[in-house]
Image 1 (cartoon, rainbow, N blue to C red):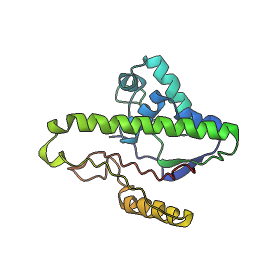
Image 2: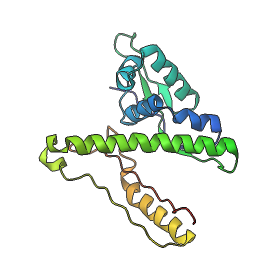
Image 3: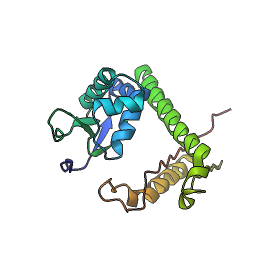
Length: 193
């Protein structure tokens, strides 16, 4: 049984280098895998990323430097050294008015969108193979609305509030019939013309 994770904390990444660290596809795959609550070795993470275990170990150490992953207790024989997610919610908080800030923010947002898009497409492509209760649950919806800046902030807050009751669930506390579900909200004004 894995050790109890440390107490929950929120972390805000403000350094452009830290934010760019998130933008690498292998690192996003590792963050995603560890976010499930699983404890994985570099070799197990390598299977997910398609990289060698030594390259994956490098990415894990970089994630550790930015407090996005941490070493878990050694497994039974003491030779396998697993990693786990740190217990906290990470948000990117950077001033995009600087060139470095704008580039870092764009890089991580693009990588995250790509990862989320791939997850959605993979589910849609194999939905017919899912158990009946999981078919027809994927949703893709959008709405173009005329909103003021204040109304846009209100909508964003309301969407976040709808998800909040479920955020505290972990691999240990989730309902038996549950599985990880990616819910991606994006509130983006159209470009000004």
